[in-house]
Image 1 (spheres, rainbow, N blue to C red):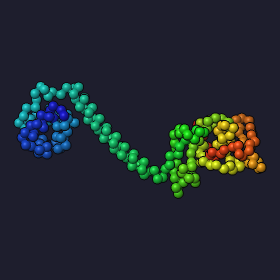
Image 2 (tube, helix red, strand yellow; image 1 turned 60 degrees about the horizontal axis):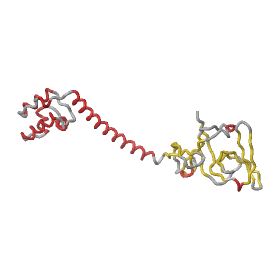
Image 3 (cartoon, one colour; image 1 turned 135 degrees about the vertical axis):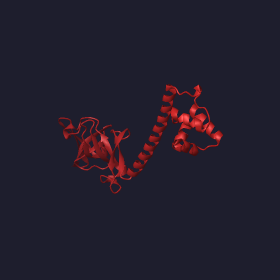
Image 4 (tube, rainbow, N blue to C red; image 1 turned 90 degrees about the horizontal axis):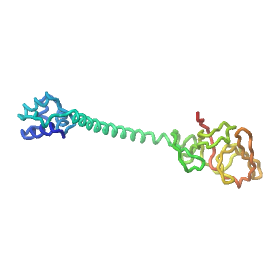
Length: 227
């Protein structure tokens, strides 16, 4: 509360006058009187003089002179209070929108090959409780970690929309685990429980493996190029 506002409130209460009555006599809104009394509004000299006459009190003693520093501090306080109000309103609106869109948009996590380290997310629409035709809890983005598949136009930093699988389908591109490492490879079935793992970082490289030696983790469906 400011010193001027405190004096006005003290005189008003002493005279038995309500904020509404005083506001009417001064030709201002009741809210204005309240803000002056609690120190949220700086009263002009003309207002103070008029209130002084109506309340039969002297509000112009030297102890109530408002310095530039005090005025700036008071306005800063008002601004901060106002900003907090705007922030709360914005937060409430954001929460409403987030709630509204939660049923139509899904945050799809972005993982490295470990499938444990989340690097953010991207939003995709939900249709019939699925994302692009796949179960919501199975979809993810893989961030390409190397250029081993550059021959497939897949470079480090690109994002691949993928879904979790355990079975191999021929000619698909998968995140696989074999020989103690994880990598993206094209997989081709050779029959007799054997598969061909294909990579291309400028020259074609193939590895023949037994199906039992390879764990399939995710199938890549679509590549989003990092420009």
